[in-house]
Amino acid sequence: MPITLVRVDDRVIHGQIVTRWAREKKCDEIIAVDDKIASDKVLSMVMKNAAPPGIKSSIYTIKDAIPKIIEARDSQKNYFIIVKTPITLLKLIEGGCDFIKEVIYGPSSARPNTVNVAPNASLTYEEIEACEQLHNWGVDITFQLVPDSKMYRWSDIREEFVKK
Image 1 (cartoon, rainbow, N blue to C red):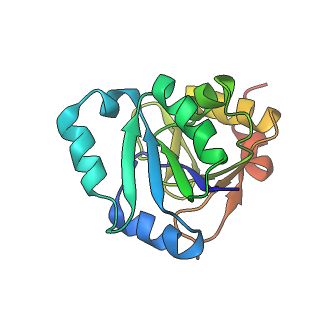
Image 2 (image 1 turned 90 degrees about the vertical axis):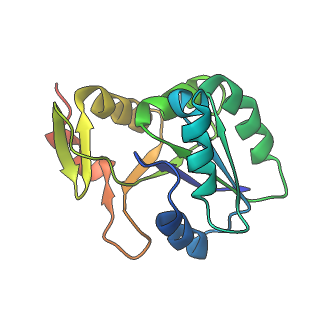
């Protein structure tokens, strides 16, 4: 499948991590999805320029990303899909990108009202609910900062964080 990596990362595009993952999984282009970043020309330009040389990057709103991701699925090029939160990913899947079945969750900074679920992964209750919904839809969520770091699967840790 030409979508070689789907990632949740609160920093979205940043060269060091994208470069590390690009060594493991082919990437010709990054599709970053975030409504706020896409509507801010300066922030959007900063993000696009953070991509490693030779890798094209684009920032889309959720609405505009859905047809682009569907097109990427059938492309000859290799794509990384990067979103800032699992809530965005949930909206992409609800909008027609239901072929996404694997997600690697990167860093998510500690913020007010967050719970640490894995190293460098602090989620709000709403983000935990989104992860649980994704899990229930058959999406395999793995928390892993870089390819050679330890992985934590949502399916193994979820019961500690999901309210019953």
